[in-house]
Image (cartoon, rainbow, N blue to C red; front, side, top):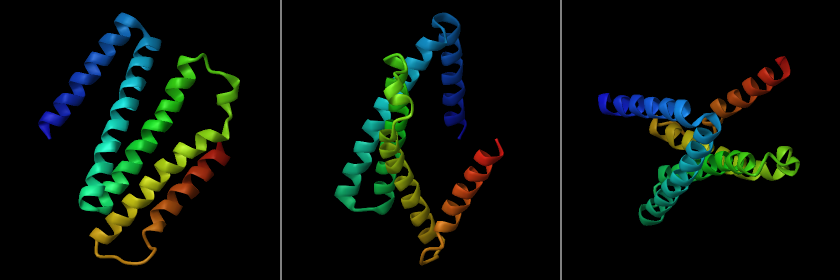
Length: 140
């Protein structure tokens, strides 16, 4: 745990130094690009693990990492090419979001089974998140 926290703190310092040296736009582009590409590589690794061992957690991780990477990648590309109007309100963006949400569903399903539960009760936290998000949206 100390090593992971130390790594996170070192990266936070490096990103802040990059911000001070190169500016927000450069660090945004480099950071989003790097995490998008690393996330896709991680997703492919989990997909390979799923194919090799057929574990549902690996499939959830593959969906989650690819969905997260594609959602972040959308905003990375959007910013890189000058925030074109065609991307600002495009329903195409919901496709990688669906992949990301599917990964979350799969994770809740696996967590649910890890607690010895069965059936669709794993949907309660999913529905709670949707309701809370909707209430926050409507309140703002």
